Image (cartoon, rainbow, N blue to C red; front, side, top):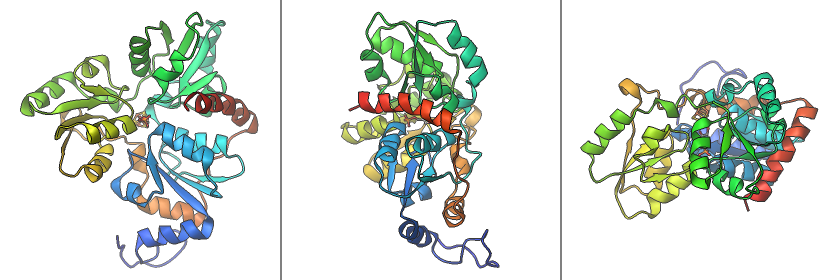
Length: 321
Ligand code: 13P
Ligand code: SF4
């Protein structure tokens, strides 16, 4: 990718191939670029590792790099920082938040938790460091069922913040979970009606969906899983058409892995582009380059929060092997 000539200063990328410039900075800084599947294709193509939330935290826990450039949203980069207090963790756009994490303000969650003093708190990784610090175990969409299954049946559990994932996990495990009523605005944008219309248009396609979707949508899914699980499923399944009910960024990897197959993104309501996560899409290749060049924006947090949030993340990592 070439960018046009412009006066050179620290805020302007040089007129050269941006991919090469990022590769050069990676070596110079001993940096690793970790990207979520919901990032724009250019970012996925420049990343050293692309994955779902669990894979990304496992990579962050193992990396030998001095600098982690996190192409994802704030809670993901924050998790990398919690695991790596001595490393520089960069997020290309510090405003890349998460509508789901925002549905769980720490003060309100503390009051909610106080109503259930004998409950264990299992929180989906899509939450702030403050919520993680109030949790006993973190989970992601790929290990939530496995983690709940490892908790003794007599132990009551609060599951936060995603009510849709919580409801799905409760159904899969037969556990009665106390749910915090949060949700993701991107995954709740898919309409069952539009999905059924699409299924009629593509009668040979299977529906693959992320568990953050609402129950009426999930009811139509042939397969439900995290982004990595969806990617693996469409690769191994001997079928060549899939309706994809999650953020369409994942389709870039699906098309790369199995180019002969057709992937149809499920539309948002009214055919808007609201099935794209507006937070994830705040990151661009240019911002990623500038973040590396300027070594900012950097993720920081109070040490007490970091230490408290580390324990439930470490538990998750140990329970996921
Ligand atoms: P996974 O990365 O676990 O698939 O979750 C998707 C998501 O919504 C991340 O915000
Ligand atoms: Fe958050 Fe939803 Fe975006 Fe994932 S897709 S980062 S849960 S707003």
